[in-house]
Length: 349
Ligand code: UT7
Image 1 (cartoon, rainbow, N blue to C red):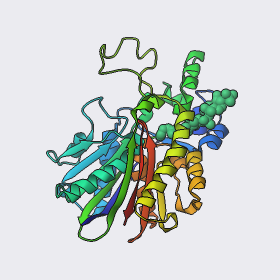
Image 2: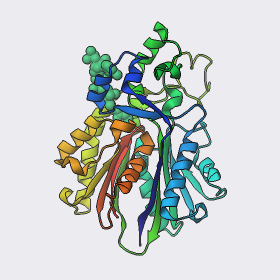
Image 3: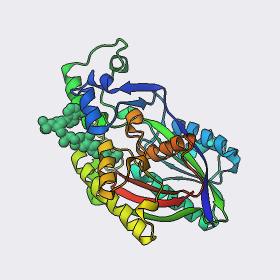
Image 4: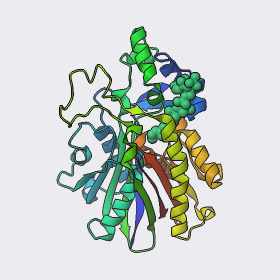
């Protein structure tokens, strides 16, 4: 008994912001962003467009590619770090948008590492006979916490230049603001009766590093939100970029090595390493640490930025579209994100 990827889909919001656009509203340059991250441009959700909207559109495409109707789905697993509402999570909203209210839905809050945990869950649900067709979704609308207000000015379409205070504020958050982009990705997996599917998963979580990237405003801790939380930008995530970077370049190779050794898989036998795209330099360092050839570690960060929980399903859909997912391949997924949560998974297609 195993599982097979039968459909993938993605949906990107229309608005594209280039590095040059960002340099209009904060102290940075297009070259700095490109050199330090590999990013050239990213998409941003429109006002009022939430993770549930992006996720539902991606899911429709994945279902169409699988040749399935939404009513064939018997479990939805959804991840985002930018939910439409603080609670409830958006999984059930997506199911409602797909016209399948009542189907069981789980919100998996593992941020950039979500896909690895989702795959483990799908494998367990299918293995335990609880589901046959699982819809896995990652979607993000980071635009809501970007530290500027005049989007027209950002795009060079009029508007007014930021005041010195607004410029300084965006600069304070620039590490975060240059990195993230929006989008949705979805993958449909189906139970099979053969050896295809998840070979193994190596996942870890460590709450000691919660402040490496988190939203500091308590929201649900007494005294809930304070009146001045917004003035103090506590609704905008704080990120300790350098420290996160170090965690990623040490923990990811370690996880991949451990997982492959556990399942007697040689790194050379893996056809594709589908990695989260937080920063191209992170993936370069992981590649070097594991001695992997560049063609086995595809990248899409230049055009999309870091799309958090949406990254791996979007990348998988791009690979599928390019005809790079072939039956019988061995894929290793790897990711690290807020929590911290990280890990890797081996899948035979
Ligand atoms: O999705 C999972 C969560 N996120 C991550 O995994 C993020 C991982 N971290 C990173 O990607 C990188 O740490 C960043 C892209 C966020 C920052 O890059 P960095 O190479 O670590 O830069 P840094 O913070 O060490 O800063 C180096 C220099 C500093 O100047 P000084 O002190 O050397 O004079 C910064 O002030 O670059 C400056 N700097 C910038 N300059 C222009 C930092 N950000 C910028 C910027 N534009 N956007």
